[in-house]
Image (tube, rainbow, N blue to C red):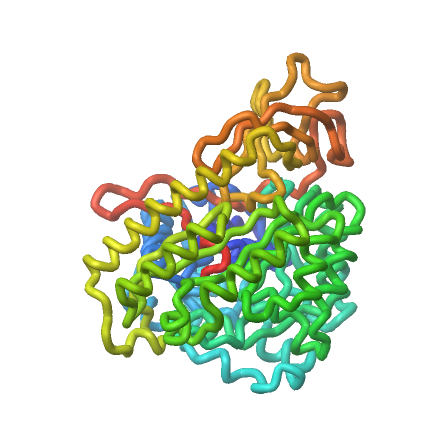
Amino acid sequence: MSPRPARRVALVTLGCSRNEVDSEELAARLATDGWDLVDDAADADAVLVNTCGFVEAAKKDSIDALLAADALREPGDGGPRAVVAVGCMAERYGRELADTLPEADAVLGFDAYPRISAHLEAVLAGSAPASHTPRDRRTLLPISPVERGDASRAAHSPHIPGHIQPAGAVTAGSGRQRLTSSPVVPLKLSSGCDRRCAFCAIPSFRGSHVSRRPEDVLAEAEWLAGQGARELVLVSENSTSYGKDLGDLRALEKLLPKLAAVPGIVRVRTVYLQPAELRPSLLEVLLTTPGLAPYLDLSFQHASPAVLRRMRRFGGSTDFLDLLRRARALLPDLGARSNVIVGFPGETDEDVDILLNFLERADLDAVGVFGYSDEEGTEAAGMADHVDPEEIENRRAEVTDLVEQLTAARAERRIGTTVEVLVEEVAGALGYGCAGHQQADADGSCTVRLPAGGPPGGVAVGDLIAARVVAAEGVDLVAEFTGMLDRAGAGPAGTVAAGPAVAGSVLPPIPDGVGPMDAVGHPSGVA
């Protein structure tokens, strides 16, 4: 029997860092089944587009990516022969997406991930699998978190890493293949969310909250460190819920010091924190444990108690300012970021004033400002007193203008201080990366001027260095190198150990008349 010819697949990932992890898990499955992962979608037999279904702009980007992949097809044997949609948008819309976008040969939901190779084979053979039929994934697990045992996780949440196969069935890390060589790597804590925020559709297609077992998270962290990871970004839909379905509300407090102690890891950053669930003991661990980033990613969404109640959230300006006060008592120079939504149904001018006043007093390092828009299937979409779209845009512009002034002033006050920068790129006499108070791709960055000739041994990607801030440009900092704190521990000088840089596919421009395509990232903390 002649050997089967190699099959090539390219993965295109849109959306948040949780999708990045999902793509790396899909890559591992495909590589195990004999697929060659390639960077250029034009060189692939199949293109797998991991879509985002969060907001309208993200949905458009996902559709544009599918159209761009389809546009690569050429008569004969040129270009990909299969274009397949997976990810949140595919899970959320399924057959509806397939019917409206015939350019996609298949639309597959999360339950298809364990057999992704077989599904791609079927498409290449001209026998496309049935399009995914959406369902409310919140109904797949017991309402009580503690009743969500391992059997339920394995049966109903195959997209959750660590629960794809029974414990011990695979070696640590073998369920994931790195697609980039970045020293900053997302690590998934859990999947799904039990909150019922009126504006958010994510729980309906991501499901109820399911935590990964601590030993699985720790094992993957150790594997990632061996693959060149230096900073771990702990992601989920709601990190503060971690452990409640494991019967241990302090599971995250116990896990964080262990992650920070993993050899090779110099920084651990936790994102997607719900203020209402941020217990004092967890706050203390986050801000006093060596190796954890001096950082809080807080999902405020607004500051007016009336608006927050309509959103089915808790707290308000007074509560949030008290939380920030307690946090800064533990760590005065911490970085704090959040996101806010303006124009939610029923929001008044007085509510906007409360939000503006809060932002002036909160002294945040970064704030994402979003104008409200209806998401189908959410409670908010059916609410009365919708704000006029033009007024929403006016309010968004007003809040954005204030935020830009406030965050720039906050950055300027860091001039003269020393920051710890994880180097992500070196170009000539400059190093680029993020300080401890900056989340990569979300909160600005730091440009470091390296000394003439460089320090002994040079500066390489993955090094943790100290630098004195000398200028600020908006939320970005400019600093001067002052010392080496921790060298990337691998390989020849000037290199850092990393997984293969494959399959983080970049598509060429979309043909005229189709529209632009931009990779979109979820602003952290929006959910």
